[in-house]
Amino acid sequence: MIFRFVGIRVIKTAIASICAIVAAGLIGSPNPLGAGLLAILGVDVTRKRSIQTVSARFFASLVGLLMASLLFGLLGFHLWVLALYILLAFPAIVRLNFKEGIVTSSVVTFHIYGAGAVTLAGVFNEVVLLLVGLGSASLVNLIYMPSEEDKLVRIRSDVDERFSRIFQQIGRCLRDPSYAWDGREVIEANALADDGIRLASRALENLLLRSDDVREDERWLVYFYMRKTQLDHVQNMMQLISQVYEQLPQCLLVAKLFDQLSRDVKEPHYTGKTEQLLLELEEMFRAMDLPATRQEFEVRSAVLQLNRELYSFLKIAKKDKQKKQLAA
View 1 (spheres, rainbow, N blue to C red):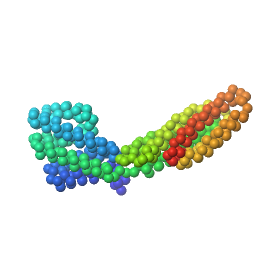
View 2 (cartoon, helix red, strand yellow; view 1 turned 60 degrees about the vertical axis):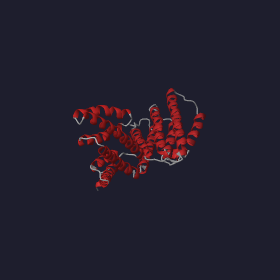
View 3 (cartoon, helix red, strand yellow; view 1 turned 135 degrees about the horizontal axis):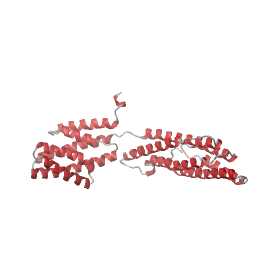
View 4 (cartoon, one colour; view 1 turned 60 degrees about the horizontal axis):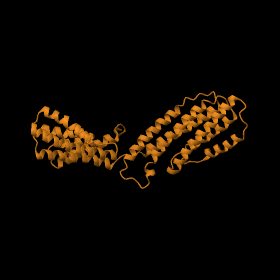
């Protein structure tokens, strides 16, 4: 039951910390607990970020050890010297682009300060603690990172479902101009797409070795960015259906398009059914008589622009779906 409430990062941190303490003890380090603390600081959320941050922490700590050894050796072990170290070392570490390592560099520096002496053996021991602690964290990170595939599939399904509801609502608005739609599904779809982008970016950072097909590696990012772009067209559609204040035969015909799209949008590939219906409908519109009243002209103009937005929406899906073989 406990694993339900404990995240995988916490579990990996515990494993890395214990392994570091045991390893430091086996090699005879006088302060094995320090390796455990450094391991806790080294565990990260992705493999790529782990390599970057561990490298920054290691080199920042070396810079900190060098500066601390010089300052303590020349000025002695006083609190004001420790403050001087912070004033000098922290900006230097940041300038070297190792800012993630400020905490780890402070840990090893405080070890030296606590020992009250700068010796070759003491500095060497701190380097060993860095290698063992950060090395354990890196090893645990590289060995296992949870797959995000199931979560991404679930989010994709939720996004597709929201798009399907959106098009059902648009069809309803076209059939009944008095119906008031609050657009809640659009907000939900946008939030889900943002979640998908964050999760897909994290999954991409866990790929240390890319495949030959770059689009295959980035297919989830492509999908969720596609949905974000399509939502821009959906918002334009919402503006247009607000201008449909009278029911016309053209409205009912376009409503059928959105009924079809509400089904197509959940298909794994681009079907082209809605596009074909749209092309046929445009031919029908061209053969119809011109509007007889101003009200009919305004409504039919909004419906025509709605078709243009729908075509742009389908064009995006057609381009991206055929290549990545994901849901439409």
